[in-house]
Length: 529
Image (cartoon, rainbow, N blue to C red; front, side, top):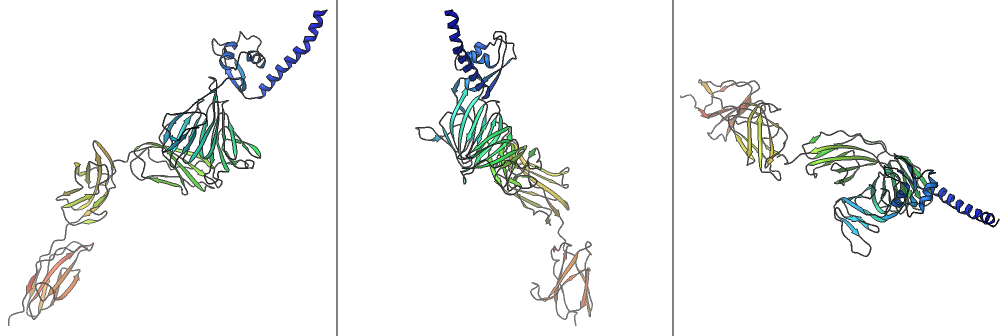
C-alpha cells in the first residue's frame, strides 16, 4: 500500500513535469524554426550533439517532432528545430569588394581604412565616404551592398552552429543599403533611427536620407519584409515600398515604379561618350543609374542620380559592364530595375579631324590631311576611299607617327577619310568619317582680242556650265585704277575702243563662287593716228 501511495503522490509531480515539458515544446512550436533533412548515417542523438545547446534537448526534439522510433529515421525525414534551441556562435563578415575611402572603426581603436578581404565582427562600424561603396558577405551567404555616404554598425553577428543560418542585426545611421538574404530561416534585421526591418530569405533595400535621418525608406524586391515603426507595423510584399518617420507607423505600402524601358545599346560600345537612354516612367521624379562590372562580387563603380532619362559618361575605362536603371518616385523610393550589359572598347581614343574641313571643297590635287593627338597614342592608321563604306581604298597608311599626311594627284570627286589611333599592337575605334569634294582649280583663260578704230572685243574659251567670268580693265599695269570690273555669264565682252592704253585680265568663277587665277594681263593701245 505504501508503494501505491508513493506512486500516487508522484503522479501529480510527474504530470507537472510533463505539462511543463509540453508547454515548452508548445512554445517552441510557436517560435522560429529550422527544418533539417536527415542524411544517410544521421541519428537524432548525433543531431542533438551537433546542433543543440546540450543533450537535454534530445527529449524535447523527440516530443516536438512526435518521433516514435528515434533509431529508425530514414534519410529525407525532416526534423523541426526551434532556433532558440540551437547553439549560437560568434561569426565574422567578409569584405568582398571595396571602392573608394571606407573607414573601419572598432571599439577602443582609432579608425583606419578598410582593406579588401578584411574580416569584420560584432561592434565594428563602417563609414563609407563620398563616391565609395563596399560589399559584405555574412556567414549564411547574405550579401549587403553599402552605398556612398553610408554609416552602419554591426550590432549582432552570430550564426546558429554550422546550420548555415545567421543571426544578424545591423544599425544603419545614414545612407543606403541593398540586401540579399538567400538562406531561408536566417535572421537578418536592420535598425534605423525610425524603423526596424526583419526578413528571412528575401531581397530588399533600406535607405536613410542624409538630409532626413529621422526617415527610413524600405523597398522590397523579392519575398516579404516585416517593417516596424515607433507606432505600428507593416508586412511589405515584393514590389512595394514604404516610408517610416520617427515616432510614426510605416506609411501604407505603395507599388514601386516599374523598370524603365531601356534602349538596348550595342554589345560592344566603341565610342565615347558612352550614352544610355530609356523611356520616361510616369510618376518618376528622378532616376538612379548604377554601373558595375559583371558578376556578384563587384560594387558599383558609379552610382548616379539623374533628373532626365539619359545617362552619358566618358570616365569609364574599357572593360565589361552591367548598368542598372531605376525610377525614383516622389517619396524617394527606388523602383524596379532594368539591367543591360555590354563591352566598352573605345580606347585608344580616335583623333579629331582638323583638315580638310568636313563637307568642304579642296581646290588642289595635292591634299593635306591633319588630325589631333589623343592621350596614350603611339601611332595612327589612315584610310581614304571614294565610298563611305571604305570598300575601295585609295590610301591605307598604317603606323603613321605624325598627325599630318599629304597625298598627291588625287582625282576630282567626293572623298571619304578616317583615322584610328594605335597604342602598341592595339588599334582603337575609327574616328568619324569625314567627307570633302575635290575640284580642280579653274584654269586661267587664254584671252584674245579684236580691235578696230571704233570697237574693242575680248573673247576666251567657254568654261563648264554654271561657271562665270570676272573681267577687269585698268589704266595701269598694277590694276590700281580700275575702269571696268564686271562679272559675265558669257565668254565674250565688247566696248568702244579706248583713246589711251588700257590693261585687261579675266578669271573664271566656279559654280560654288570659287575664283580661279587671273589670266596674264594684256595691253591694248589706241589706234595709231
